Amino acid sequence: MSGETDLALLIAGMNPRLDAELYVFATTPSDISPPPEALMSFREAEGLTLILPRDAAVRLGLPGIFPCRRITLEIHSSLEAVGFMAAIARRLAEAGMGVNPVAAFHHDHIFVPAHRAGEAMAILREMAKDADDEDAGSGS
Image (tube, rainbow, N blue to C red):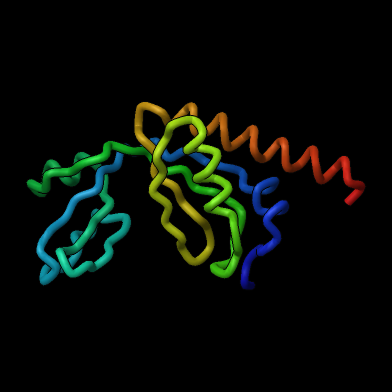
């Protein structure tokens, strides 16, 4: 199963789900292994970037930045889908909100400022409803 590629279907069916956990981004030297608490790790020339629960970062002595919440877009999106993250990032940018996306095998995930997570969810639900209404109006 390769996932959905149709942009209208992706937006209409994204079904955003807000994770209750508070996450932070942190960095460590690139020669260490990611801690098991890390939700994501990525090696860059400057070091190992981690996304992990804030409590885990504190416990591990890692200074975390960007307190955020994860929103999982529940539709199984293709890694080759075009424009899905761009449409979401554009809409959140219009609200003055930064977004840090992560594409995983089955779903896309976005990390938004923790204090604006509810607002982000409302925007995403509105996007999905508008796309669904447009699809219904076209007779598809």
